[in-house]
Amino acid sequence: MISSSDRGKRILIVNVNWIGDVIFSTPFIKAVRDAYPDGYIACLLHPRCVEILKGSPRIDEIIVYDEEGEHKGIIGKLMLISYLRKIHFDIAFVLHRSFTKALLTFLAGVKERIGYPTKNRGPLLTRTIDLPEDEVHKVEYFLGLARGYGIRVRENSYEFFVEDADRESVKKFLKGHGVADSDKIVVLCPGGNWAPKRWPKTNFARLADMLAEKTSAKIILSGAKKDALLVEEIRLMMNSIPVISCGMTTLKELAAMLERADLVVANDSGPMHLAVAMKSRVIALFGPTSPTLTGPYGKGNYRVICKTKECDVPCYDVTCTDNRCMALITVRDVFDEAERVLNAGNR
Image (cartoon, rainbow, N blue to C red; front, side, top):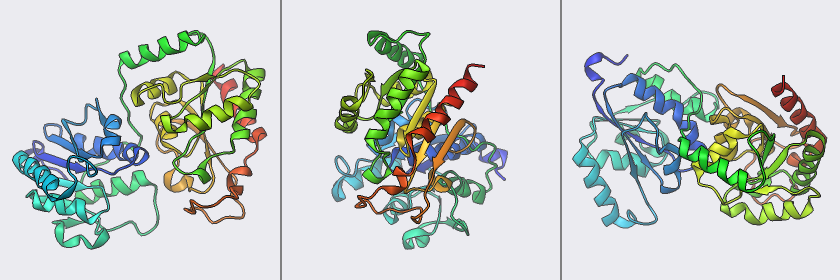
């Protein structure tokens, strides 16, 4: 257990590199803050993930580690190490599995360095935590480091923080596209960071039309800027007219929009986990990835549809063109679940 005399320590959390994984780390960050209420907690983070933790009351500082830019090469890494040394961290929790991230904390002179003994980095750590015997959800994988160090874990739900300005921005955007405060809205997120994780775009188009016709919901097609072409292809297949927000919001504004939604339907993706963090009502569509390992987690109002029969899951064959694991999920499957969720919300 953490003693009262240790609660003011200076702590570095070396985080992971992807949006979904950083969301998975938020229960760990909360547990560390609860254990060290008077501590100085900094998080080392990839530039693309900064907005996930920006504004979090659990963190005192976000330190950007830009491996492809400012910190590329030996000189850049030495600059980062020099900065870390000046803060005089007492403890580093290395959530990232890599050897390099553990080496950074070693060279930065952090007194205690805690992590799993992956990538032969055990000698760089002052305390290694035993890896889970069985595969566990990523949230529990991170929380295992906290528990192994003696930190009490009270919560396992995601956290994400938006401000009223983000909500107002979304309200203004929706109003500008003919969506009133009283309108029912369903947000569809058809993207995914690799193609086999995506439900067929024809299915998203048909689902959107059914929801617009039978539930009177306003349909919003959302996602990152890189999903713009996919969203446009879906729009052209639809009979109804959706609102396109893809690439038109910041990550905080996207979260505020998902919070406003009556329902979110999404593939296994960052926006799906963001919606769960915002306590939105979510239908998550899973195919090649495992809901047990990377599905929605903690408290929330979410449902997972996964109908894999002929494939071993998880499967990380990004070259797969068959996509049968996603194609097995029918439009009727998702629409019926969506109706149940929306009707339950109206009671």
